[in-house]
Amino acid sequence: MEREKRNDMSFSRKRSFTFGAYGGVDKFTCGDETRPESAEDNILDILDSPVNESKPFLSASSNQRGSRIDEQRCEFPLPLKSQLLTIGGDLPLILPSKLGGYWIDPPLERLVDVSPTSPDYGHDPDSYDIMERDGEAKIYHEFFCSRYHHSFTAVDPSLGPLVLSVCLEDEDNKLRVILRMKECSLHGVFSVSLFPNIPSAVELAKMLCDRVTVSKFEVVSYLKAPELITAFDEHRVSPNFKFGILCQKDGQLTEEEILSNNEESEEFKEFLSILGDTIQLQGFTGFRGGLDVCHGQTGSEAVFTSFQGREILFHVATKLPFTEGDPQQLQRKRHIGNDIVALVYQEGQTPFLSDVIKSHFLHCFLVVRRNQRAEETGEPSYQVSVTAREDVPPFGPVLPDPPIFTERSLLREFLLTKLINAEISCYKAQQFSRLELRTRSSLLESLQAELSTRSQCMMGDPSLAALPPSEGVRGVSEGSGGFIENFKRAIRVRSHSFETLGVPRKTGGSASLKPKAEKDGESDKSPGPPPALPDSLAPTDLKDQASPQEET
Image (tube, rainbow, N blue to C red; front, top):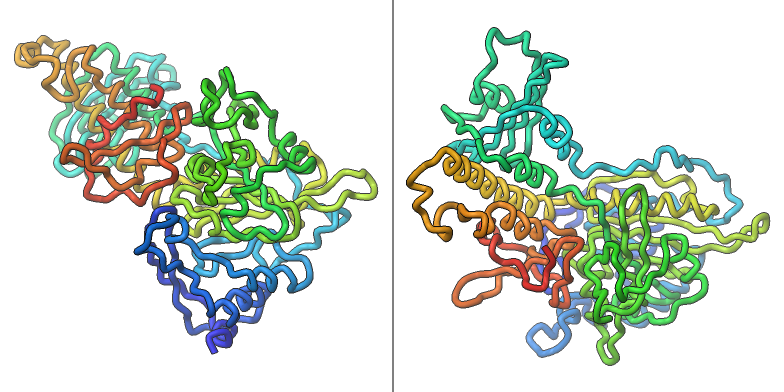
């Protein structure tokens, strides 16, 4: 009866998200609209078959001692595997989550002929553009630092800390203005001829944002202010990326099976060589993506490449340490589960399930399947598909139709561009954008206080000069750290692993966090990502929580 209802009704999702040790569960209810039966319905019918009713999907061992994964994830009974793998025909690269919450490109309704001799159109390397995570991050460095300019600070009753920068471009007779607020930075260019007199800082700020209510700004006279402002503006810009790589063999449908693969086939090695070079970690001086380059604790090899001025390191599951007797392979999950985007290489026809890898951080998967060699060239072709959580916006480059690549160089350029754009797009998902806003707010508050306090010291304020280094906002003396040290600490909060999405740990009666390092930092020792950061935790609580193992 339930299966008939699925065929007659569409899914109208009502989102709820339940956090556990490794991930969340999206729940939905059925709507009233009808839709034609599709390939997705046929596959989901198998997932709903009576065979599954003999064994509950969600483990009931949450009150018993045992594996954390068993408490959180769905298990696929063996009869399900046998049905799924014998339904006949070519299976898609990706199957949707039974609980929803993911989009797939191309959709199942557009199953393609995987023959390498299919008509090949849509490949346009000129359109493989890398997205900018923050297109205006370098405006201050580009237009202000090389010119005479002024900066101002204020604390607005409703908007909070404000940092304003104003530059007069004599050659164009224009005023260039940047207003930094907690939510965003506003940039504007005004012709001087529009004003009888040069506007005040308050007037310029209100021209960019009419919600500004302050009556005056303080002038920044600290000599190193441009350095601090540049660090704040560019705190989201990074030339380094790290991605996970999983190898899915034929018949593997669970996380444990995929993470337990040790042997690398010649076809898999050939695919890795398309992405980059296999490097020895010992003594490696390039971007290491949190891997150990001194003591061999994260394996001896990794895959690394440089692409359009960016360094990319791949966490290849088969090259990370394997632990006998650990079905969860936490030494591997520790790194791949903390990536935001992962690539899945399929050996065989078994589809990848969108939510099979449970992680708070993994929001997108690129799946690649190797097909037979073309008779004309003798080279294999590769079919590509993409899946991401539903709050991740679409990103380019667009998949060709059919999504099949026969040229290695074209496949490499497409995958690397797609991986980078996928991560940048994932930051717009609700989970990450909320944390980035909190991090930005904390950094801006620290920047405004630092600029204001040091400027008053430059002006000879006797009350501040008498303060010991430990007092004042973030410390006044150079030796007390100041904004730069707080910047280094807070920047780890928005690191590409976003490990500070965790529940605060109690230490000495107070909540504390242990953030994951930025791209060039050490990986956290915890085996997997914790639940989401509570909204009650103030952003400023993050400033003193840097791990002693993290690099600065």
